[in-house]
Length: 250
Ligand SMILES: Nc1ncnc2c1ncn2[C@@H]1O[C@H](COP(=O)(O)OP(=O)(O)OP(=O)(O)O)[C@@H](O)[C@H]1O
Image (tube, rainbow, N blue to C red):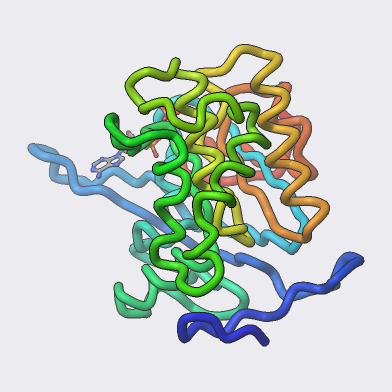
């Protein structure tokens, strides 16, 4: 068991695939939103269950408005479901205090979302190093070297000192990916991570995310409209009318 920042997490094996406890396991998750001027709430997720094991790559597809981002927010402990359980390494999170959920989120999850949430005047190196400001110890001291390495891995080794506003949309997205990976998260949650990228760069970036998830027994959950990309995952699920079913995209 690792004990980092007060959170107990199972140790990852040095090699090989563990039979292992699921990274994430949700069961019977239901989410409704109250809409203005509508009596009946909108049911976005209905009795959704999903298990993500170490090393797994999972893609979720569905029409616009199907609830994919809502599901990803629940998996990422950013939102709580109205019903159901969300277990991370066996720990039930829906009843945890917000502070504990935030700590578990920070230690475990790397987010690559559609909204980039990057600061326009910071350099690429500063953006990517930022999550390590809270890491402490060696990673805090080496944050710029680690950021430079992460930026090189997404092909931005020559743009370390460029400010966010001077980068193209695709380059900004790669900065966001480098930032999501800098803390070496066990679970990567990605929402349309290649939307702004050309096919070649998109392929390289996805190789990086898939390799990280598979080779190091991390896990990846990917939301996408791109069915060719979804087919690269070990498992594909379709979200339709609030229900999640296993299935291959058309
Ligand atoms: N906070 C909220 N309050 C009210 N309705 C919401 C809220 N968040 C999401 N919704 C609604 O829930 C439904 C699902 O939204 P969500 O963003 O999860 O869909 P999505 O499948 O990710 O869509 P897209 O592919 O277009 O990004 C939509 O009808 C949306 O308007």
